[in-house]
Length: 220
Image (cartoon, rainbow, N blue to C red; front, side, top):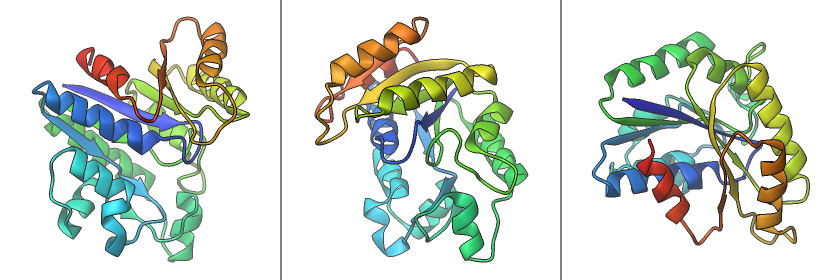
């Protein structure tokens, strides 16, 4: 079984777009694929269809129901904040050990491909002492890093790669997902990142193009 952790340089880079497109590409190849978004903030059940959780349910062919949402996103918070802050607003906290146990049980139960989408960027806090980076390091899964093509994305991407490398996490690829309305060239952004990350495939993803993910799916 192949499991992959999808993370990002920050919020709104296209992480869910990439995860969902990759799931659809895998299913089109006849693969059995599951997708999880264990921790999500800014969630409202009455807006499930447009939520990250709903997008992943649809991409994996599951009904958009409260039961299925709870199955792939057990830790759901209303406020559109980092998980530690969103949980605190509700008098709750993210149980880091429980998140790890959930992910490990899902990995053990899959027979083909499992995509685990993180929340926010690499260094987003989950609780008082753990970040998404700690989560990835504990699971020891290969990582797919999603970045944007906005001004500043190059620095954010290289910083994220440095953090991942320091924790000895293997990066399967970097996806530079086109930022809508950005004046920064997508291909130039990818070329610059590639110069500094020569050992890692750096792929570009125009928002209207998913062929790159079909190719990546064939290699999982």
